[in-house]
Amino acid sequence: MVITATAVFRSSILLVSTILITTSFIAFAVTGHANQLLATYCSSGNWTDEIIVVISSGLGFVAGVLGVLAAFKANLGTEEHNCRTNRFHTFYTVAMVFATVSLVVTVISTVLSAVKQAWLSNTCHEPSGTRDHSIRFKCTPELAACSILPMLGRRNEAERKWACNETRASRMLLIPLAVFSFLLVVLYIAQVYLARKRAIAARLPEVMRAHVKRYHD
Image 1: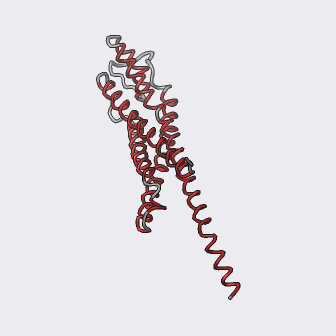
Image 2: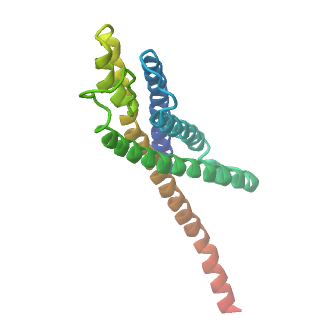
Image 3: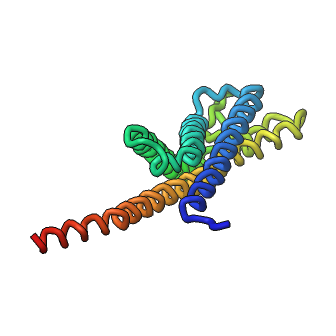
């Protein structure tokens, strides 16, 4: 059995896309559950960190689904009619665009969340003293769960630790989302390069025959 480069790329895109879909779903689920746990202790409002994780996981999920479809349709360019080939090229372009957007947004989200986490770590902590009984903290969900909730009592220590772990995991899951989005983009580019190289090689004999005929004429 001969394994072609096209088959290798198709299998790789399918594998990476499946992992991207799974990671995106886990990130979305963990973020949602962590938000529910935090809401039982404090008014979270609209956490920017949660929004960027949800957006990144949503784009990753769509990019993964398109990658799976592209992997199953990857042989249409050589086996179907030209009109279907054009439709496949359009679909492939859309899949590449979504993978690229997912990569860019996830990388930006990862950097922003890391910077915000470091920046607010200086303001989200137990105060040494207050002038009134109303205390407002400016925190990320992770800092709120890991640093502030222990101040509110030890009644549900296990639940607090669970919220801390989930908020930290939701932020860390941005890294594999970015990695697999990057791998997907690289595989798309490599497959396009291979397809163009094969197209040039297929047209080469025809071009040579045309030159020979022109020379004899």
